[in-house]
Length: 376
Ligand SMILES: O=C(O)CCC(=O)c1ccccc1C(=O)O
Ligand SMILES: [Mg+2]
Image (cartoon, rainbow, N blue to C red; front, side):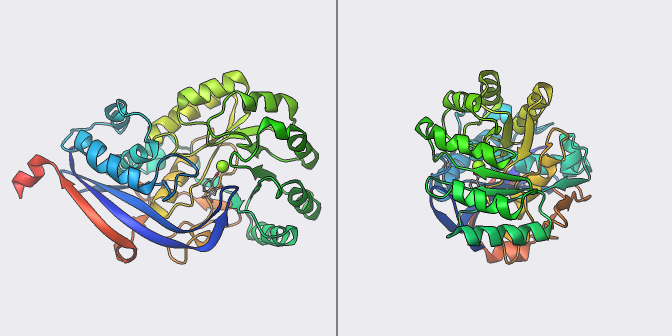
C-alpha cells in the first residue's frame, strides 16, 4: 500500500471529571489524531497520547506536531509499505519521540488491517473476543471519598481497582479501601513519587494484599526498583521506565519488576508492544495494557492490543463514558460487567464519527505525496 496522504488533526476535548496524579490535575485534553490514506482512498487512524505538559514523559502535543510534521511525515509519505512493521524500521533512526511515532504507526496498522479485511486484533495476532478491564482512580480529597468512588466502580463491574497514591496520600487511603472491600483486586500507582528513602513506608504496602504497586520510583530508574522488589512481597509493575523491548529485557533481567504495564504510545507503537508481549510471555512476566486517558481512536487501539494472550491482567482501558460526555467514534467503547467486547469491524472496528470529531477539531494539516499532488 502506498502512503499517499497523512493528516494531522489537533483536537481539544474536556474530560467529564478532573484526574489527579502525584504530579497534578488534568481535565482539558488537547491531543492529535493522525489519519493515513492510501492510494485507493482507504484511511487508517492513530492517536497521539502525549499531554500538553511533559509531566509523565518528555513529549508534549507540540513536540509531537513538530516531530510528526517535520520528520516522520517526510520519511513515510509516498512509501510503498507491505506491512506496518516496516514503519518502525523507517522510524528507527529517529531517537525516542515514541508517542509521535506510535500515533503514525498506529494509523498504518489500522489501514493495513482494513485493507486485509481483518480486525486490528486479528492483524496483531490477538485471540480474545472479550477483554477484562479495570479502572484507574485519581487521588481523591479524602479517604471517605476514595471509598465511595471505588464503591461506584465496583458496582459498575470493573475487575480491578487502581488508586493513584503520593506521599501523604497513600497508606491510610489504601487501608480504608481495603477494609471496606476485603476481596476486591486492588493496586496502587505512584507515578514515580517515591525514592528508596521511603522503603519503610513502601514495605507497609505488603499488609494490603495488593496485586502490585506501579512505578513507585523514578521514571528513568531500572536499578532501584530491583532493590525495592527484593524487599517487597507486593509485585512491582513498571510503567514510565519501559520505552522498548530492550528496557523490558533489562528490567526483567535485573529483577526490577514482576509485571509490566504496556502503553502503545510509550513504547513507540504496536510493533514494539508486540515484541514486549512476546518476550514477557516467554519469561512468564504478567502484562496489562495501560491507559493515557485516550479518546476513542487510542482507546480502540488499546482494546485490540489487549486481545493478545499475554495480557493476563485487567488493564486501564475503561469505557468511553468514564472519561467523555460523547466520544468521537461509533459506537463508543462500552465496558459491561468489567468486560469490553472486541468489535468485529475491520481495522480498529469502531467508526470515526466525523461530525463529532469536527466539533472538537482545532485545525488540520494535510500532507500529500508528490504522486498524489500530481494526479490532482
Ligand atoms: O484511565 C486511564 O487511561 C489511565 C489512567 C492513568 O493511570 C494514567 C493517566 C495519565 C497518565 C498516566 C497514567 C498512568 O497509568 O500512570
Ligand atoms: Mg502508571
